[in-house]
Amino acid sequence: MIICKSPQEIKKMQEAAHIVADVLLKIEQVVEPGMTTGHLDKLAEKIILKSGGIPAFKGYKGRISSIPFPSSICASINHEVVHGIPGPRKIEAGDLVSIDVGVELNGYFGDAARSYLIGEVDEVTRQLWEATREALDLSIEHCFAGRRLSDLSHSIEQRAKRSGFSVVKDFVGHGIGTKMHEDPQILNYGPPGQGPKLKPGMVLAIEPMLNIGRSAVKVLDDGWTVVTQDGSTSCHFEDMVAITDGKPLVLSRV
Image (tube, rainbow, N blue to C red; front, side, top):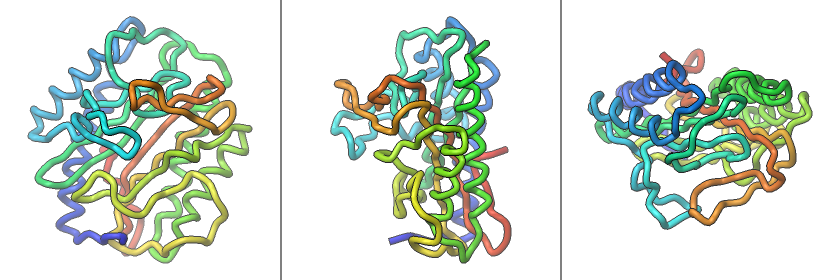
C-alpha cells in the first residue's frame, strides 16, 4: 500500500532530508585522494548527530542481510554498486565514489545518494557519472500527479541505453516515510504507462544505478556490499521527491 503524506508530514521529511543533503554537500567539499571511507563515515555521523538526527543506516537489517549494517553511510567505490561498508580503504585518484546517507528525525526518514569523481577519471567513467545524474533528473520530470510510476523507470532506462550503459535490476528505489523503505518499489527499467498513478502526498526515493558493463550484480561475503558481476564501474544517485498538486518537490536538495 502506498501511503500518502500530509503537508505537515512532508515538511518533517524535508527536515530529515536536508540533514542528508548537508552531509552530502560536506563530503563533496572534502573528499580527496588518500582519504579513507571510514573518515567520511565519522564526518557524516558527527553532522547527523549535531543536527539532532539519527544515522538511519547504522544497525539496519535489510532484505539482503540479517547482519546489522555497521556504519552511518554506505561508501561504494568503482565496481561496488551500493551498500559498501566504510573502513580503512583509501580513496584514490580516478575513483568513482558513491555515498548513500539515511537520517531519521522525529520519526521520519531522509535518504539520498551522490557519486563523486575523484581527480582525473577516464572518459567512460565520466560519461557514466553524467548519464546517471541526468537519469535522476529526467525521472523527476515525470513526478506529476496523474503520471504512471513506470514513466519514471522508463526514462531512467532510456537514458542509460542512450550512452550504452545498463541499469541494475536487482536493487530499486522505494517509497519512504515513517519507514526507510515503503511501497512502491521503483524499478530502473520497464515500459512507460504502467503501475499506479502518482498522487499528491506520495514521497518517492528514486535511485538510478547504472553500470558500464552488464546489469548483473552479486553480494559479497560481508553480507552487504553489492558489486557488478563483471567488475565494471557502477554509479548511483538518489533523491527524495514529493508528489504535489503542482511541480515535483525535491526534498533532499538545498
